[in-house]
Amino acid sequence: MQLEVLGVGGAGCRIADAIRAAEPTDHSFLTDVFAFDTDGSSLSGTVIPESHRFRYGPDDIDGGLGGDLERGRTVGRACADDLLERVTRTTAAAADAILVAVGLGGATGGGTVPALVAALQQRTDTPVYVLATLPADREFDAAADRARSGPRGSAADAPRPNAAANAVATLERLDGVASAIITFDNEDWLRPGEALRDGRDRCNRELATRIAAVFAGGGDSDGAVAQTVVDASDIRRIVGDQSAVVALGYGDQTVETNGSRFGLGLLSAEPDVDTSDAVSATETVVRKGIHGKRSLECDPETAERGLLIVGGPPAWLNRRAIAEGRRTLESAIGGSGILGGDAPRLDGDRVFAAVVLAGVESERIEALRAAADRAETAD
Image (cartoon, rainbow, N blue to C red; front, side, top):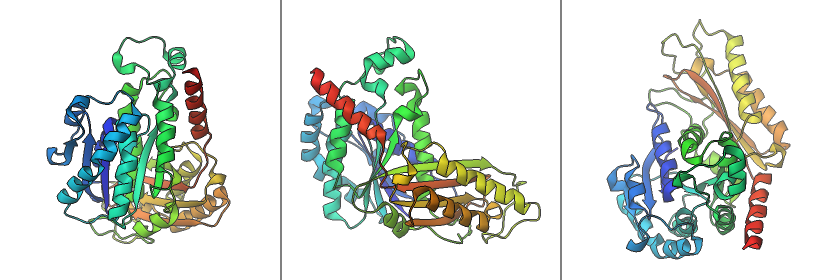
């Protein structure tokens, strides 16, 4: 499928950067990538072409909004149509879906994205998904931050007291507006004692890897064709159009390819790929994808629907093991709303499994609501 990515705010632009870097060289799936921010210096730090980078808002906020979500909303409402005009004026190819990346703890992205997504929904029938990172406790809780890692002198590590409240408020405004909300929890992915500025690039790469695995689709530019293609309609069917909260799972494993190129069919196994090895590799990555660390920690049983994509060198993709993995996912979420497919990659040396859990419930979101309430009470 073809995906258009819009990064909004500092965190959103960095995520858009990471997705652009994660695009497989042998399988392009991005039509365009844009970066929008009120901070011109932040924009200049991206690798997105200058023609696709835009600073917006009045001059007196160049440098950011300092966590002021209300002002962010004002600016977002005033500028949403102009940002949309820049996208439609620049984009040459039609996308199957639009992905808007944002860090929910901030004021620029959090203030602008609900208005921008609403404007996009009015102008196009293309689904508009939001890719949202949740703030870590150390971003807004100074006491928790000091307990984890001790005092630090860098201004870049200063806590953002409004981050939890901004995240909750933005999620509420996206409900009923975004087609779906794909979530990534910084708290769960940052290492103990690690500052956000030190860990965010690694976290963004992890997130981008999962996005590429899901949206790059089946097939390969060199001619490998998936046995069961997962296309834009399949993803839309699973994540829905009712602002479902979505969590992503992922697992991968390096396999021996002997530097050879595999055949064009899914199961055109080379003699040196033992069936039991192929089955084992597929089972391993599927198990990691379903039961391993997710972009948002949640109970899979709360998911309303699920999707499994298994990819890698064609000879290593075992049809029986993939089918069994789909049954395992169906059992894990306790429902029948399951789709599955494969994504052969001729030049790859890794077998991977990407899992989409749609409509999940998460204690982390409730914890952010509680933190926001505590902060409001303290004020």
